[in-house]
Image (cartoon, rainbow, N blue to C red; front, side, top):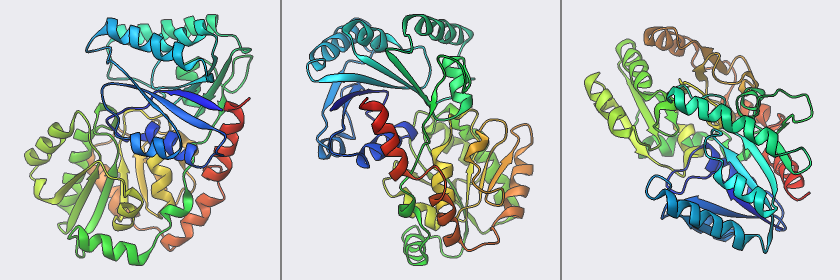
Length: 372
Protein backbone atom coordinates (compact mmCIF):
# COMPACT_ATOMS: atom_id res chain seq x y z
CA UNK A 1 0.00 0.00 0.00
CA UNK A 2 1.30 3.44 -0.95
CA UNK A 3 1.10 6.27 1.60
CA UNK A 4 1.05 9.90 0.43
CA UNK A 5 3.38 11.72 2.84
CA UNK A 6 3.40 15.47 3.53
CA UNK A 7 5.59 17.61 5.77
CA UNK A 8 9.17 16.75 4.80
CA UNK A 9 11.58 19.41 3.57
CA UNK A 10 13.21 18.87 0.21
CA UNK A 11 16.30 20.91 1.04
CA UNK A 12 17.12 19.99 4.64
CA UNK A 13 17.64 16.84 6.67
CA UNK A 14 16.06 17.66 10.01
CA UNK A 15 14.17 15.74 12.66
CA UNK A 16 11.02 15.09 10.62
CA UNK A 17 12.97 14.02 7.53
CA UNK A 18 15.16 11.70 9.61
CA UNK A 19 12.12 10.22 11.33
CA UNK A 20 10.19 9.53 8.12
CA UNK A 21 13.07 8.11 6.09
CA UNK A 22 14.40 5.91 8.88
CA UNK A 23 11.00 4.62 9.96
CA UNK A 24 10.03 3.66 6.41
CA UNK A 25 13.38 1.87 5.99
CA UNK A 26 12.34 -0.43 8.85
CA UNK A 27 8.83 -1.14 7.60
CA UNK A 28 7.85 -4.05 5.39
CA UNK A 29 7.98 -3.76 1.59
CA UNK A 30 4.20 -3.55 1.62
CA UNK A 31 4.28 0.01 3.00
CA UNK A 32 5.74 2.53 0.54
CA UNK A 33 6.08 6.27 1.24
CA UNK A 34 5.51 8.71 -1.64
CA UNK A 35 6.51 12.26 -0.69
CA UNK A 36 4.85 15.56 -1.63
CA UNK A 37 7.64 18.15 -1.47
CA UNK A 38 7.07 21.91 -1.56
CA UNK A 39 9.77 23.39 -3.79
CA UNK A 40 11.66 22.51 -6.94
CA UNK A 41 14.18 20.02 -5.54
CA UNK A 42 14.50 17.13 -3.10
CA UNK A 43 17.83 16.03 -1.65
CA UNK A 44 16.24 12.79 -0.42
CA UNK A 45 15.15 11.54 -3.88
CA UNK A 46 17.75 8.77 -4.17
CA UNK A 47 16.90 7.31 -0.77
CA UNK A 48 13.16 7.55 -1.43
CA UNK A 49 13.57 5.77 -4.77
CA UNK A 50 15.57 3.00 -3.08
CA UNK A 51 12.43 2.14 -1.10
CA UNK A 52 10.30 2.23 -4.26
CA UNK A 53 8.83 5.63 -3.39
CA UNK A 54 8.00 8.59 -5.59
CA UNK A 55 8.59 12.33 -5.19
CA UNK A 56 5.91 14.84 -6.18
CA UNK A 57 7.13 18.45 -6.40
CA UNK A 58 4.70 21.34 -5.94
CA UNK A 59 5.48 25.04 -6.34
CA UNK A 60 6.29 26.87 -3.12
CA UNK A 61 3.35 28.87 -1.75
CA UNK A 62 5.80 31.71 -1.00
CA UNK A 63 6.89 31.80 -4.63
CA UNK A 64 3.45 31.52 -6.26
CA UNK A 65 0.37 30.92 -4.05
CA UNK A 66 -1.97 30.20 -6.96
CA UNK A 67 0.41 27.72 -8.58
CA UNK A 68 0.89 26.06 -5.16
CA UNK A 69 -2.87 25.48 -4.88
CA UNK A 70 -3.15 24.16 -8.44
CA UNK A 71 -0.13 21.85 -8.09
CA UNK A 72 -1.33 20.55 -4.71
CA UNK A 73 -4.80 19.75 -6.06
CA UNK A 74 -3.37 18.06 -9.17
CA UNK A 75 -0.99 15.86 -7.17
CA UNK A 76 -3.61 14.86 -4.59
CA UNK A 77 -6.22 14.11 -7.27
CA UNK A 78 -3.89 12.02 -9.46
CA UNK A 79 -2.41 10.16 -6.48
CA UNK A 80 -5.86 9.14 -5.27
CA UNK A 81 -5.84 6.38 -7.89
CA UNK A 82 -3.35 4.31 -5.89
CA UNK A 83 -3.31 5.99 -2.46
CA UNK A 84 -5.87 5.52 0.26
CA UNK A 85 -4.13 7.40 3.10
CA UNK A 86 -2.63 10.91 3.25
CA UNK A 87 -0.15 11.24 6.12
CA UNK A 88 0.62 14.77 7.35
CA UNK A 89 3.60 15.55 9.57
CA UNK A 90 2.81 18.88 11.18
CA UNK A 91 5.00 21.64 12.59
CA UNK A 92 1.98 23.92 13.09
CA UNK A 93 -1.67 24.01 12.01
CA UNK A 94 -1.20 27.08 9.79
CA UNK A 95 -0.64 25.13 6.58
CA UNK A 96 -3.61 22.77 6.24
CA UNK A 97 -4.55 23.44 2.61
CA UNK A 98 -3.46 19.97 1.52
CA UNK A 99 -5.30 18.41 4.48
CA UNK A 100 -8.56 20.03 3.37
CA UNK A 101 -7.98 19.01 -0.25
CA UNK A 102 -7.33 15.43 0.81
CA UNK A 103 -10.51 15.45 2.90
CA UNK A 104 -12.55 16.60 -0.10
CA UNK A 105 -10.99 13.93 -2.31
CA UNK A 106 -11.88 11.18 0.16
CA UNK A 107 -8.49 10.25 1.60
CA UNK A 108 -8.15 8.67 5.02
CA UNK A 109 -6.35 11.41 7.00
CA UNK A 110 -3.47 10.81 9.41
CA UNK A 111 -2.21 13.87 11.30
CA UNK A 112 1.11 13.57 13.16
CA UNK A 113 2.12 16.31 15.62
CA UNK A 114 5.87 16.95 15.77
CA UNK A 115 6.07 20.26 17.63
CA UNK A 116 4.99 21.79 20.94
CA UNK A 117 5.35 25.56 20.38
CA UNK A 118 6.04 28.38 17.90
CA UNK A 119 7.32 31.24 20.11
CA UNK A 120 9.08 33.29 17.42
CA UNK A 121 6.02 33.84 15.26
CA UNK A 122 3.68 36.83 15.15
CA UNK A 123 0.40 37.03 17.12
CA UNK A 124 -1.40 36.66 13.77
CA UNK A 125 0.42 33.37 13.12
CA UNK A 126 -0.62 32.05 16.54
CA UNK A 127 -4.21 33.15 15.92
CA UNK A 128 -4.23 31.34 12.57
CA UNK A 129 -2.78 28.23 14.23
CA UNK A 130 -5.58 28.14 16.81
CA UNK A 131 -8.26 28.83 14.18
CA UNK A 132 -7.06 26.01 11.92
CA UNK A 133 -6.79 23.66 14.90
CA UNK A 134 -10.43 24.30 15.77
CA UNK A 135 -11.48 24.05 12.13
CA UNK A 136 -9.93 20.61 11.72
CA UNK A 137 -11.48 19.36 14.95
CA UNK A 138 -14.88 20.22 13.49
CA UNK A 139 -14.26 18.91 9.98
CA UNK A 140 -12.40 15.69 10.79
CA UNK A 141 -14.18 13.16 12.97
CA UNK A 142 -12.47 10.21 14.61
CA UNK A 143 -13.91 8.02 11.84
CA UNK A 144 -11.88 9.60 9.02
CA UNK A 145 -8.89 11.02 10.88
CA UNK A 146 -6.14 9.42 12.95
CA UNK A 147 -4.18 11.68 15.29
CA UNK A 148 -0.60 10.80 16.22
CA UNK A 149 1.95 12.65 18.33
CA UNK A 150 5.55 12.38 19.52
CA UNK A 151 4.75 13.67 23.03
CA UNK A 152 1.85 14.84 25.17
CA UNK A 153 3.06 18.45 24.87
CA UNK A 154 2.87 18.22 21.08
CA UNK A 155 -0.60 16.72 21.29
CA UNK A 156 -1.86 19.62 23.42
CA UNK A 157 -0.27 22.24 21.16
CA UNK A 158 -1.35 20.73 17.86
CA UNK A 159 -4.69 19.13 18.66
CA UNK A 160 -5.74 20.81 21.90
CA UNK A 161 -5.99 17.57 23.85
CA UNK A 162 -4.01 15.25 26.07
CA UNK A 163 -3.99 11.46 25.98
CA UNK A 164 -7.69 11.18 26.71
CA UNK A 165 -11.02 11.98 25.11
CA UNK A 166 -12.68 11.11 21.82
CA UNK A 167 -10.09 12.88 19.66
CA UNK A 168 -6.98 11.98 21.64
CA UNK A 169 -3.71 11.36 19.85
CA UNK A 170 -1.81 8.09 19.88
CA UNK A 171 1.83 8.28 20.92
CA UNK A 172 4.44 7.31 18.32
CA UNK A 173 7.95 7.37 19.72
CA UNK A 174 10.61 9.12 17.63
CA UNK A 175 12.54 5.90 17.43
CA UNK A 176 16.07 5.40 16.14
CA UNK A 177 18.23 2.56 14.85
CA UNK A 178 19.91 2.15 18.22
CA UNK A 179 22.76 -0.14 17.16
CA UNK A 180 24.00 2.41 14.60
CA UNK A 181 24.90 4.78 17.45
CA UNK A 182 26.76 2.31 19.67
CA UNK A 183 29.99 3.84 20.92
CA UNK A 184 33.15 2.55 19.24
CA UNK A 185 36.64 3.58 20.41
CA UNK A 186 37.95 2.83 16.91
CA UNK A 187 35.41 5.09 15.20
CA UNK A 188 36.03 7.79 17.79
CA UNK A 189 39.76 7.78 17.14
CA UNK A 190 39.29 7.77 13.37
CA UNK A 191 36.74 10.61 13.40
CA UNK A 192 38.75 12.76 15.78
CA UNK A 193 41.81 12.39 13.56
CA UNK A 194 39.72 13.31 10.51
CA UNK A 195 38.40 16.45 12.24
CA UNK A 196 41.83 17.30 13.71
CA UNK A 197 40.53 17.33 17.27
CA UNK A 198 43.61 15.76 18.85
CA UNK A 199 43.03 15.73 22.64
CA UNK A 200 40.53 18.63 22.70
CA UNK A 201 37.42 18.54 24.88
CA UNK A 202 34.72 18.40 22.19
CA UNK A 203 31.24 19.84 22.61
CA UNK A 204 28.68 19.01 19.93
CA UNK A 205 25.42 20.21 18.44
CA UNK A 206 23.34 18.74 15.61
CA UNK A 207 20.21 20.24 14.15
CA UNK A 208 18.73 22.82 11.86
CA UNK A 209 20.30 26.26 12.36
CA UNK A 210 17.01 28.10 12.79
CA UNK A 211 15.45 30.28 15.48
CA UNK A 212 13.95 27.19 17.13
CA UNK A 213 17.40 25.84 18.02
CA UNK A 214 18.50 29.11 19.66
CA UNK A 215 21.90 29.22 17.89
CA UNK A 216 22.93 32.63 19.24
CA UNK A 217 22.57 31.40 22.81
CA UNK A 218 24.38 28.21 21.81
CA UNK A 219 27.41 30.26 20.72
CA UNK A 220 27.33 32.16 24.02
CA UNK A 221 27.41 28.86 25.91
CA UNK A 222 30.34 27.75 23.77
CA UNK A 223 32.18 30.99 24.53
CA UNK A 224 31.71 30.49 28.27
CA UNK A 225 32.98 26.90 28.06
CA UNK A 226 36.00 28.05 26.09
CA UNK A 227 36.67 30.74 28.71
CA UNK A 228 36.84 28.06 31.41
CA UNK A 229 38.57 25.33 29.42
CA UNK A 230 40.87 26.56 26.67
CA UNK A 231 41.48 23.21 25.03
CA UNK A 232 37.90 22.97 23.74
CA UNK A 233 36.55 22.55 20.22
CA UNK A 234 32.91 22.83 19.15
CA UNK A 235 31.26 20.78 16.41
CA UNK A 236 28.13 22.18 14.76
CA UNK A 237 26.43 19.77 12.35
CA UNK A 238 23.54 21.22 10.39
CA UNK A 239 22.40 23.92 8.03
CA UNK A 240 19.59 26.45 7.96
CA UNK A 241 18.54 30.05 7.49
CA UNK A 242 20.54 31.24 10.51
CA UNK A 243 23.84 29.61 9.58
CA UNK A 244 25.42 32.92 8.52
CA UNK A 245 24.17 34.60 11.69
CA UNK A 246 25.56 31.77 13.83
CA UNK A 247 28.96 32.04 12.18
CA UNK A 248 28.93 35.81 12.68
CA UNK A 249 28.00 35.39 16.35
CA UNK A 250 30.96 33.02 16.80
CA UNK A 251 33.27 35.66 15.32
CA UNK A 252 31.85 38.36 17.59
CA UNK A 253 32.46 36.17 20.64
CA UNK A 254 36.02 35.41 19.54
CA UNK A 255 35.53 31.64 19.21
CA UNK A 256 35.21 31.22 15.42
CA UNK A 257 38.61 29.54 15.26
CA UNK A 258 37.39 26.88 17.67
CA UNK A 259 33.99 26.13 16.08
CA UNK A 260 33.84 23.67 13.21
CA UNK A 261 30.71 24.30 11.13
CA UNK A 262 30.26 20.94 9.42
CA UNK A 263 27.09 21.65 7.44
CA UNK A 264 24.51 18.97 6.69
CA UNK A 265 25.96 15.55 7.49
CA UNK A 266 24.89 11.99 6.87
CA UNK A 267 27.44 10.55 9.31
CA UNK A 268 25.93 11.89 12.53
CA UNK A 269 26.20 8.49 14.18
CA UNK A 270 29.97 8.73 13.74
CA UNK A 271 30.20 12.40 14.69
CA UNK A 272 28.60 11.59 18.05
CA UNK A 273 31.54 9.26 18.67
CA UNK A 274 33.99 12.16 18.35
CA UNK A 275 32.09 14.35 20.82
CA UNK A 276 32.44 14.43 24.60
CA UNK A 277 29.03 15.98 25.31
CA UNK A 278 26.00 17.33 23.45
CA UNK A 279 24.12 20.63 23.86
CA UNK A 280 20.62 21.55 22.63
CA UNK A 281 19.29 24.85 24.10
CA UNK A 282 16.11 24.88 21.95
CA UNK A 283 13.32 27.39 22.44
CA UNK A 284 10.78 24.67 21.63
CA UNK A 285 10.85 21.02 20.59
CA UNK A 286 8.30 18.35 19.82
CA UNK A 287 10.78 15.85 21.21
CA UNK A 288 14.39 16.37 20.08
CA UNK A 289 15.33 13.10 18.38
CA UNK A 290 19.02 14.08 18.35
CA UNK A 291 18.97 13.73 22.14
CA UNK A 292 17.93 10.08 21.83
CA UNK A 293 20.68 9.50 19.28
CA UNK A 294 23.28 11.23 21.44
CA UNK A 295 22.30 9.17 24.50
CA UNK A 296 22.55 6.00 22.44
CA UNK A 297 26.15 7.04 21.72
CA UNK A 298 26.76 7.50 25.44
CA UNK A 299 27.01 11.29 25.34
CA UNK A 300 26.09 13.44 28.35
CA UNK A 301 23.34 15.72 27.03
CA UNK A 302 22.33 19.22 28.13
CA UNK A 303 19.02 20.66 26.96
CA UNK A 304 16.39 23.26 27.77
CA UNK A 305 14.33 22.58 30.87
CA UNK A 306 10.55 23.01 30.55
CA UNK A 307 10.98 22.92 26.75
CA UNK A 308 12.22 19.42 25.96
CA UNK A 309 9.62 16.74 26.90
CA UNK A 310 10.74 14.82 29.98
CA UNK A 311 10.20 11.50 28.17
CA UNK A 312 13.49 12.12 26.33
CA UNK A 313 15.41 11.54 29.58
CA UNK A 314 16.36 7.86 29.49
CA UNK A 315 18.70 8.33 32.46
CA UNK A 316 19.11 11.33 34.80
CA UNK A 317 22.84 10.62 34.82
CA UNK A 318 23.12 11.19 31.09
CA UNK A 319 20.29 13.61 30.22
CA UNK A 320 20.48 16.96 32.04
CA UNK A 321 17.95 19.80 31.83
CA UNK A 322 18.98 23.44 32.37
CA UNK A 323 16.62 26.42 32.40
CA UNK A 324 16.88 28.95 29.60
CA UNK A 325 16.40 31.60 32.29
CA UNK A 326 19.91 30.88 33.54
CA UNK A 327 22.89 32.63 31.89
CA UNK A 328 25.30 30.93 29.46
CA UNK A 329 27.93 30.90 32.23
CA UNK A 330 25.72 28.59 34.32
CA UNK A 331 25.23 26.26 31.35
CA UNK A 332 29.00 26.13 30.88
CA UNK A 333 29.61 25.33 34.55
CA UNK A 334 27.06 22.50 34.53
CA UNK A 335 28.39 21.04 31.29
CA UNK A 336 31.95 20.94 32.57
CA UNK A 337 30.86 19.65 35.96
CA UNK A 338 28.65 16.80 34.70
CA UNK A 339 30.80 15.54 31.80
CA UNK A 340 31.63 12.67 31.54
CA UNK A 341 29.15 10.19 33.02
CA UNK A 342 30.34 7.51 35.44
CA UNK A 343 29.57 4.51 33.20
CA UNK A 344 31.40 3.45 30.01
CA UNK A 345 29.81 4.95 26.91
CA UNK A 346 29.02 1.51 25.46
CA UNK A 347 26.65 0.84 28.37
CA UNK A 348 24.16 3.51 27.39
CA UNK A 349 23.36 1.97 24.03
CA UNK A 350 21.85 -0.98 25.88
CA UNK A 351 19.71 1.39 27.95
CA UNK A 352 18.27 3.00 24.81
CA UNK A 353 17.78 -0.41 23.17
CA UNK A 354 15.48 -1.43 26.03
CA UNK A 355 13.44 1.77 25.77
CA UNK A 356 10.40 2.44 23.52
CA UNK A 357 12.69 4.43 21.21
CA UNK A 358 13.90 1.30 19.40
CA UNK A 359 12.99 1.67 15.74
CA UNK A 360 12.36 -2.00 15.01
CA UNK A 361 9.26 -2.21 17.19
CA UNK A 362 8.05 1.36 16.65
CA UNK A 363 8.23 1.20 12.86
CA UNK A 364 5.96 -1.84 12.99
CA UNK A 365 3.61 0.10 15.25
CA UNK A 366 3.38 3.05 12.83
CA UNK A 367 3.03 0.79 9.78
CA UNK A 368 0.10 -1.02 11.37
CA UNK A 369 -1.68 2.33 11.91
CA UNK A 370 -0.99 3.61 8.39
CA UNK A 371 -2.17 0.42 6.69
CA UNK A 372 -5.46 0.12 8.56
